[in-house]
Length: 120
Image (cartoon, rainbow, N blue to C red; front, side):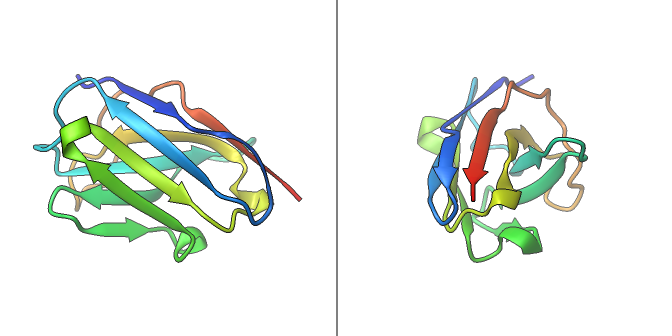
């Protein structure tokens, strides 16, 4: 099973930007869909952005226009560029493999995640 390591989180002021990285332990070019999730304290983990091997992307409404997901198959890496950050974006961010573009349940094991904290 592919292992995933997230990085790039930190403390940022509202309106700021961060770029998260997710490095996979094996080649990802055959993986149909990968996504970024987040879990805020006391809340369920939610899928916020996903990317398909052919280039399609999709986002939860709360991050549309602010977050951009991308993947570099040559580097086995998925990125999440986050702009115009808000305090409500504060959460631990994880990446994972999805069962497919149409079945968006997480398929792989969870990494340690990376903490994003947005101050007001």
